[in-house]
Image (cartoon, rainbow, N blue to C red; front, top):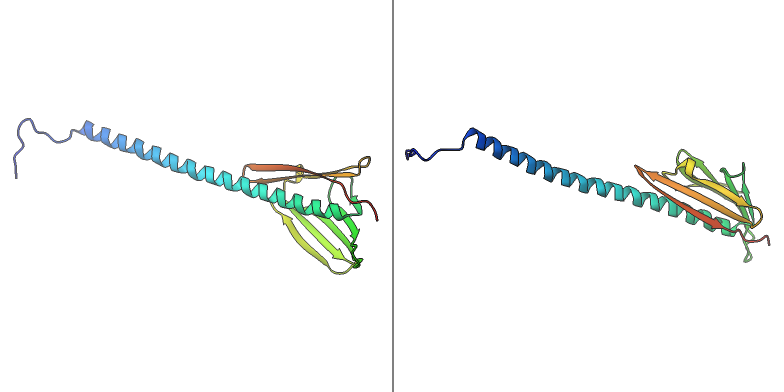
Length: 167
């Protein structure tokens, strides 16, 4: 083994503490950066889910309103929304579609010619306070406002749809 000369010394306790502190600061900075990336990814995912739910709800309700000959927003501007129409083109099938909001979900219940009904969940994460209907008797237009909230991310869209005139 070599002997240490008088001028050669190992690390002092203070130098060792400084190295450990700097390593801790660098580790904390790297950890915080990684956590921010994960949080941004979660927020972006929640926002995209909310946008998707709102768009899907708006698309289906708008398509049914465009077919409808009769629109009945039971209870004024609240759900359920009842739509009825008779198909043309020789089939003459009579459709009744009822949209309802239950437990943050938008449901579509359709029956054809009064037969068995088909219940379908249209959208999830629907904000009950931010989703409503407004019927304009003068212009014969239904305004459907839908809001979806996923985590802390929220998305609202407004759809104005005019049903087809009675045949």
